[in-house]
Image (cartoon, rainbow, N blue to C red; front, side, top):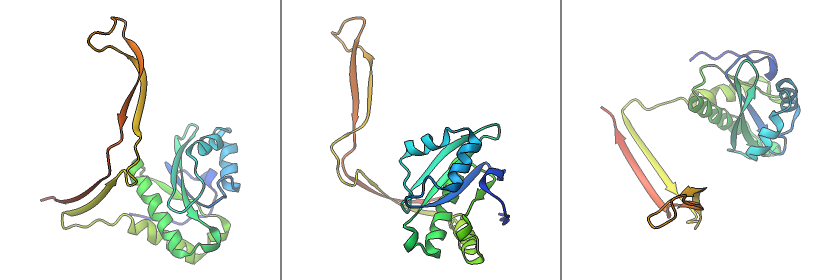
Length: 193
């Protein structure tokens, strides 16, 4: 993997995915406003629809639109006053995972002026590289916790016309639901050879 550091802003980035680390409460900051102006105004409502607030660990991706078909990946940094270099590493790692999920081959990580010094850049590069690390021994361990709080809710709800035996030929418009699975914990150990 080749990593290059360049000076510039998010609007001039030619990457398929633009990773933008955002502190809590700054989801309408200068960089996002500039990108929104360049994208034609639909960006800020799209971000609002994701309910992104910048809390640590939060990741939201929204299309930037336009001819270049770029995507913006917002990564929450948490409270700016408590932000340290490890927070920047974690954010870069989350951006790397989002890039892998999106299948992006070229990624730009845009840092604000306050984080563009050598220490912050080093932490971001380190986090981005570490997130791409894979064990080569063929073993994978995975822990999944489903419905952690055992919420009694529906996983999905549909409203459409269906017909069960004994109902009119035209069917009945009704709400159809799939209940959420109960609390479940799965431990997976997989080996490839």
